[in-house]
Image (cartoon, rainbow over all chains, first blue to last red; front, side, top):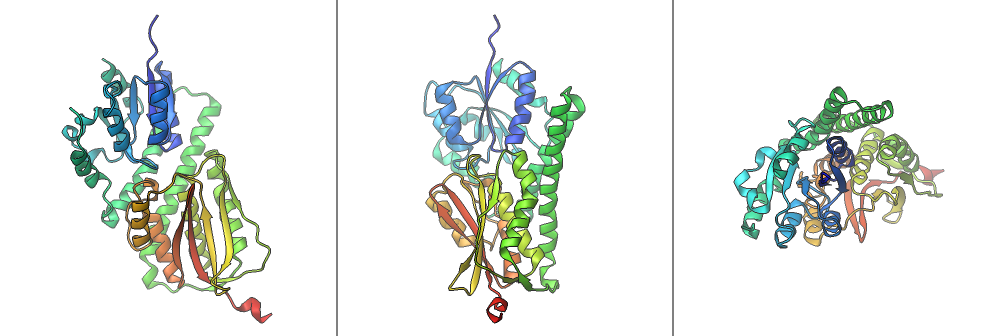
Length: 124
Length: 246
């Protein structure tokens, strides 16, 4: 039986989260949502996701707080993270690889299916 | 290899800087709703969603566009403030709160949130420009939407302040607590620049800056009160003496 990969979407805009979730579910993934970094940490603790799709600017602690937390646990540091942000043009990939970020998606230019392609790529 | 705090500071310093030029902040704030509208439209074009889901996505596009348009209208209005003369008139703040709540209710409902007006039985009047005061409260209401818990309604309230000399109109949300250092930065810059409020990225300062400009044009001022479970953003406006003459 094929394993259904679980994706955690960390996004404070619930409509955008819903949008990514709809696309990923249609592609056969199981999806969980967290509106902020603290909820994401709880979700990671209770059900370790295979991939995290992470917005950068979040309510409360920002994405880097979550990335630091993940990197500080050996069992969580390997979870691939896809950064999905409106600030993609300001990010140098070499700066964020150390945080487990494997892909960066630009919300302003991405196609809805790009999130599926990115998940597939990091799961290879 | 693990990321160091130093690296994080460098990255965040660029992306989350509190000293972004006005235009950059404005562009960033408009990017979010436009990106969402684009994503939804692309999905509608390509996917086979059922009619109920299609209607829901169309509604989201409309409401998101309206929010972005409110912001662009506010920006153009604020840029013309110095050249304009605004009529100040006695306004019932309770009634204005009702109008704002009514206008924002579809957006709140679509996001599964509630907005309500706290009742106040004492008659009050403020001396203000109706459109500017309405826009200030809409800004606060838009801002609160992103940070309030779905179980607690955002509350609009008008109350007598400063021994009756002023009226305070506030919007109380129930969101994540704002860290003390961030709060201090907000207090230092509220309404005077477009500083990003890091723990509340959607409050990136632009809406509050515009609200501050509108308040100043009416000899008012904006402020914020931090709660354990959220924030109240408020505007203080001169009370009208008209009622006392009756």
